[in-house]
Amino acid sequence: HILSGTALYNDNGKDVTLHAGATTFCPDGEKHGIENASKTEDLVFMALIIKK
Image 1 (tube, rainbow, N blue to C red):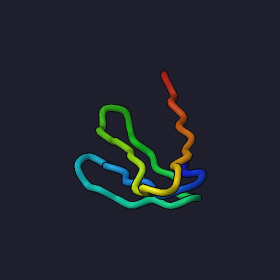
Image 2: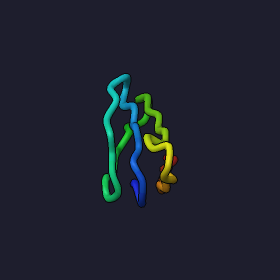
Image 3: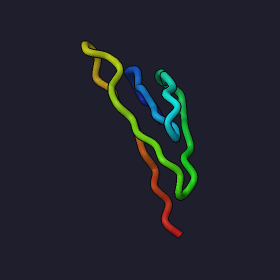
């Protein structure tokens, strides 16, 4: 969940730009990545990892 800033989110090879308020979900076994898309603003996000 993006709390503030702008993120470049990689969802299985597809790049998506996310802004504050956006939430993503990555199923078990899928690939993802996240990076700060801004050079002047911090990216603040919250990650929830659920283990079975």
